Image (cartoon, rainbow, N blue to C red; front, side, top):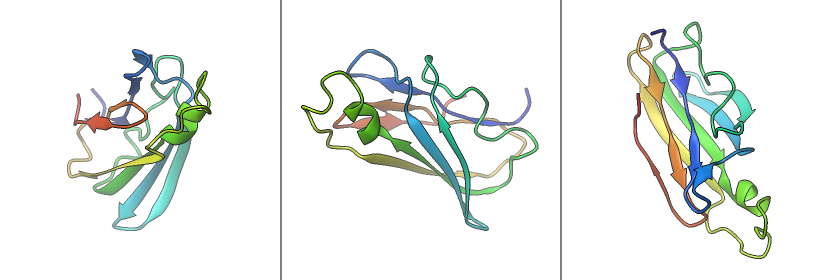
Length: 117
């Protein structure tokens, strides 16, 4: 399996994938850079990996999930303001030859993540 960085987002309040959620990917070290802006598809995933095999590099990264905007755009979302706005997940890629999966399980008030496969 080729190395890659991927993600998916599950909306636990609705019990379904979070379609249309904006994601920003940043490299923080060794050289800071904004790498990518993407939006989740109907399955709560990105259409392509956040980083493909040729883009994988050791370093510190941050994925910023725009959950406040996502929930504001949901039916009735404007009436119930979300507690969370941007959920930043900071992590390290130590082995650029490995695959990293960073999922987000989210509600307007809480979130959970883990290193998936």
